[in-house]
Length: 351
Image (cartoon, rainbow, N blue to C red):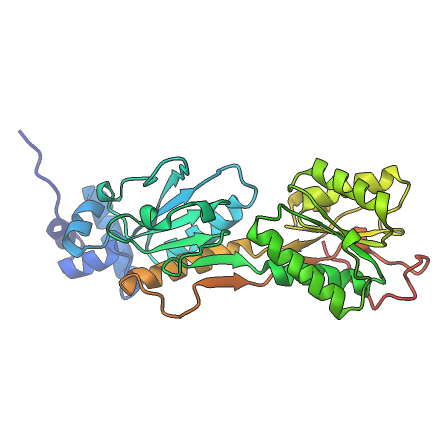
């Protein structure tokens, strides 16, 4: 004998409430008293009745499901971004479907086969994607995190790389440095371009030595930072160094040590990203921290607004930038016996 399918009416009857109340609980509406919510949840659990997302999507046109497309699951920034996305999604009653972004195929996925309301893309190379294809023929709301979108239909949430670079050079200037070298990431990366602009503006604003010989390129790796610093040391002198990320800063410190230069006494060093190892290397590394969790929260919140607004942004700015924060540690610490002590403006240690 076939077992009868449990319905929303069964759940309402067992809980002693209306079917509308059960529906509000299953859809995580905030308009239900917590005691009523618990009563309905217990009744549904006992009956084995749960919200059918496909049926709900067919009935309402909304599934409260967002598809996360991630290029690299091993990226060091991914966990913090996901924490922000997941927290906001949970508070707003949305579920997450996660897939790997395949940038080698057209379409990336088949939107017609999915019951989803919107898409979040986390990719280093989003500028190489056709976001219109990713959004599919239905033109689903889509937002990018930690990557630039050139298409005004699809907003992006980014760290303010320009501001972060400016903070790094400002800190070196206030620590008494007069000539700050810069190791940039690849020149075709928008983040590298913004950090270079921030570096140059701070050099100008703080009357530091303006010299093209103080700028070298890396490729985000530790070995590239080492080699770039070797090239810098072979052609000029400097008492401060800002690297476009923490691995390049670490490689640069190795090169400085080989030249018997002490960090921070002879050269103060600042990195970017505030990677976990910054707190454990010696000297501990000053770095610029990106608001990764906040970026995830803002991206999810913006996408939800787009979903509820028929895919439209409620503001005109499609590039959303969040401020970075300087984490000051021993690699820029100035003590009274250091040569730069007379020129410094202050120092505060931060873990």
